[in-house]
Image (cartoon, rainbow, N blue to C red):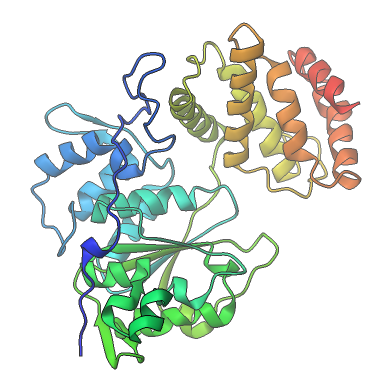
Length: 391
C-alpha cells in the first residue's frame, strides 16, 4: 500500500523574506524579528521570481526553474529585461552544469570537497532553485539515528493507539519523496555506516518501506537527494560501494586563483556584514587580499612567487575560514575602531585559524612570520600586528 504524506502535517516555513544583500530595509530598531540568516529561497526571492518569469525553457517535473535557469541562478548573469542575478558560486561552470544535470536524472548528487569549498552553500541554493525549498535537511553527525532519514513516531499517540499513520513522524527525506522535492543530507560521511545504508533502498528503489504499517512511501517525480561530504575531518565513515554507486559525485575544488578567492571573500563578507548591520567595507580589499595570500601560501606550502617552501599547519585554512576572519575583523573595526579594516583587526583571527595545535602550529606560524611576512615589502604593519597577538 502506498501512503501519502500530508505536507500540512509539518509546520510550514514562516521565515520572512529578505533582499539578496541581506538588508531588510528597516531602520534602526526595526525588523528585529527578521531571521538572522534567511533561507536561500527567501533571501534571493526576487532573483528566483525574475528567473521564473523569464524562463521559457523546458522544466523537469515539479522543478521551479529549468536546468539552464538553475545554473544561471548559481553562476550569475543578466536577464533579457536587465535583471542582474548575483553569482552564488564562483568556480568552473561545468561543475555546476553537471550537478544540475544530475538532479534532472534519477541519480542522487554527492558534493565532495575539503572543508570550506562551499558544499553546503551550493547544496542549499540548488535545492532552493529546483524545489523552492531548501529546508528538507538532515544534518549528519556521529549520533544521527536511522529515524532522521526514514521516519520516527509520536510516542504519545503510539502508546495510546498503536502504530498508525497519525502516529508516524515523516523525516525530511520522506517528505521530499512524497512531495517530489529535493532533500539534503549534510556531512554524509559523519553518519554511522549502518545509518548511511538506509539510503540505499530509497535511492535505488525510490521507495521507503514502513513495515510497522505494512505500507510504503513511493517517491514521486521531482524527488532527488543532495549529500555533502569531505574526507579531511576526523570521524569520517567511508561510504559503502553500494551506496556510493547511487550517487554521481561532483568534487568542488578550492578557488583556482587568488583573485577568485578574494572575490568570493569580498562578496560573502559584504552579504554577512549587511545582515549584521555592519558598515560597508571601505578600502578593505587590501586586507582581504593579505588574508587570502597568507591562507593560500600556508595551505599550498609555498610562497606566491614559488621561491620559498613553507610548512603547512594542521588546519585547512579554507575560504570559509578567510570569510570568518575578515567578518570578525570588520566587526572589530566597526565597534572598536574607525570603521576601516586594518591589519590589527584581522591579526587575531588569522592566529586563531592557523594555530589549531598550540605546539606544532605555533612554530609553523612564527617561522612564516619571520621568514616571509617580515621581509615582504608593504607588510610592516601586518607583521607588527601579528607579532603583537602571537607573543
